[in-house]
Image 1 (spheres, helix red, strand yellow):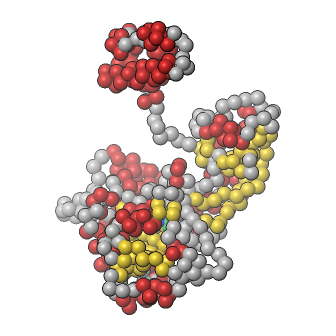
Image 2 (cartoon, rainbow, N blue to C red):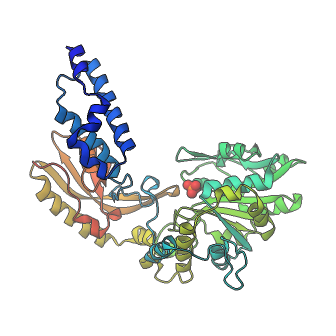
Length: 459
Ligand SMILES: *Cc1c(COP(=O)(O)O)cnc(C)c1O
């Protein structure tokens, strides 16, 4: 049985000549088609050998080849409806860009731009200069440079300022963010020596002082971002570290993580550290992400004293971490919005999402409930309830923002399965499972997405 099935499997050459597969050559090169045929035959051979396949009609084989190749034409990066309630969702690409940035990206993508040309005299320009002036005005720093993301910013800062020397850091700040960013590992790879001081919950100024020595390269302060230490705690704040750094002549570096350019409490949110405060307190270098609370494209911003930023800029690794014209254009346009923070919560999508009025969210939730009640049928129980959204990406970890969710349950279908059904619908909808119920958080769902939520099943 198995043998005869294997014998009946057509050869690659036969399939290459199959007249019904000829239309594929209009969209794919001969070698791409051939690879696909090989791949499909290999899978089929294995299925036969495991006894999973009993029938191998030519039409089935053709359909598999077509499906394999057509799959290559579908974009892998698809728009997703964010119903998760995590406003800055790293897995969904973080901050949505403001219109001004979208327009700037389109222009930059379309053709030549003055990325590294000084338009005064045609001489060589600096690609970071476009954003640097804005960052200087917005934060009060002396100089700034831009790299691929904040992890890169931390890496190149340590590598430039403390290679082969000790970076002193409190044990309470040796954080991991989202699995792939673990501070001790980045520090090690940057070539500096990790010098831990204090304990997880308490670190005193004398702990830092005791660690100072011949080989001290810098003092590092890290914003804990995604967790909080409460209770019997003590940490040394930036101004004291700055004083200590001055006394010993070593740089003081702060990784702010999210780094907001405005005090979010003016928009009714909890306060997150503001970059200009660190600059005022005398930090030598501060690093932060451009696509977290700042609301721009993925990038890492390094701001601070000219002397240190220059050393970072001249590091040969900068070439490997530099951003492209699309990022520069989007970042520049986003930063410009901060020149007047009045009404920023209307113009900057990330702030719009974070400050969306509860009445508006509630209205949206009821509209979704109404739509889904007709689309899902009577056997699903659908309610609008109170819940909370989170900021995400390590920003404002203990800040939950009141929201309204649409809860969807079914007495026979579990929450995880409903979650998957929504995820596999067109467009994909990413909700969340909360207390064993599937929920759609109306805060993060855009108005224009509401009508597109079309779950696969009915009944
Ligand atoms: C998020 C974060 C990082 C990493 O930033 P990316 O932009 O994701 O590279 C590093 N440090 C802190 C404190 C953070 O919050």
